Length: 343
Length: 258
Image (cartoon, rainbow over all chains, first blue to last red; front, top):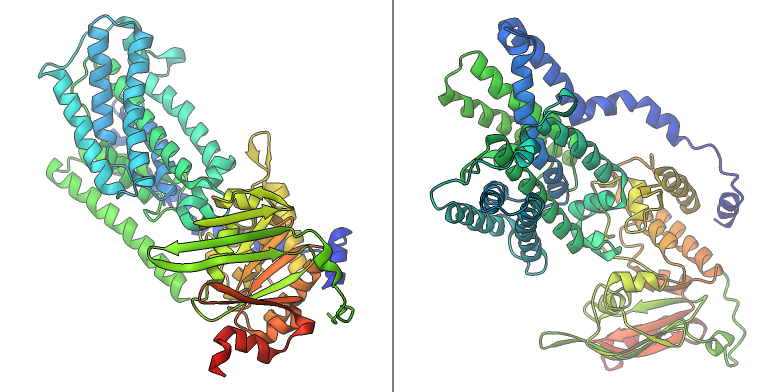
């Protein structure tokens, strides 16, 4: 034992056999990754559907259908990025739709009353982050169930949106505010810009920073992380606040794009984002998942919906197809876990 | 490791200032008194075994020192200065590392990260993965255990490998004191003896080690001092050279039983 240690201290370590092993299994590991499977699946989907109909990919004018699809998806990725952080950290948030609507309406009301744009925006973010903080505080310090807590705050935020709008959505905003949603610097529309800025940031935070490592540790085994000095409550509260801030941003961008802040602007966005993240490999038990995976999962769901429309599948059945895909993804997960557990 | 203590003259290690001492520490769980007025010291360069029957308070005592639980009464001194340990961070900051009975590993993460949870090295605001991997390799070689790769997911490793990772992490984390709660419980005979050798190696590096164990054979092999808890009270602390297994068993069970 002592000689082993001396050799380590002198740096005379025998060449490790582990690196050879990891090179050999590299291909198998790549193919075992959810992101890679999804990427292949997405490409195959585009190839197959564009054989079935030209309107999916390039007809009648360029990639118009894909462009519309990506703009819609970009709005959802604003929420997806922090939602993956929250899910990986072992938490769950139902309140997003409410926060999107509430922030849009509150900011809109302030703008219509002539409040300067920066103050209206900051107020919107403050209102949104307050909901996120309440979520995080209740779940960590008061040990309340995240599902029920965020269902409650969803309804509260939705109620505030309805109450503040008083039946008439605030509308007709200053041009400078509208350009935050409608502008297209360098020919790229604003929602895509938000996605271009937020997604790499989220990827970097989750995969490279200490905060990201702590999110994985907290979601993987909260008590173990706590015992080794990870501030697990802070990780959770910050994640909830980030989700709420992103929801607030989405609410304001929707308001700017539509030039009107309806209290029911989004309905179901949150569950679509969570479903996309889960299809992309985020485990609801926490500890697993990547932004890339979530993005590819959301892309798959978005394309599925879009292709259903282009192919003329009845809207009644579209949601049904989404449900089947989600069940297949969750089922594949459960099967893979059982195989690992048994062998 | 042969017993190298001089015959009983006032033993030199007791003249040293204790690294950590607890004075009058008590812990209650509701009406239950889990620990009662414990006076406990940890000396540098000493392996101290903590023994006692189930429910004697061994794990509670370890958890108070590691910050997993907080004491309800009493004082704690580190190198003679009063300190408070209210959280695991406080304990880690004092250079105290703990291997918990359930190992406290994150099964979804790889070996390298598990060795550094809470203390990930950073460079320019990012986790320094290269440094983490290099140090992980060094630690694995030090422990002389067979781990397939530092990229391996810990949840897929064997019990012995997981145990080795938990100890490796503690070796890295614990500058001054290592607390080991049943470190050989999940190991086979050969792995157990490797572990005991490793613990002796660490003692030679002037770390203070507290080991909770049910295995008196292991305790008598490596401990310098054996401290016995019974019913939440510290009923005796003996140098190994001054005691016998019979006496320790009497202290564990209560002398009146034999």
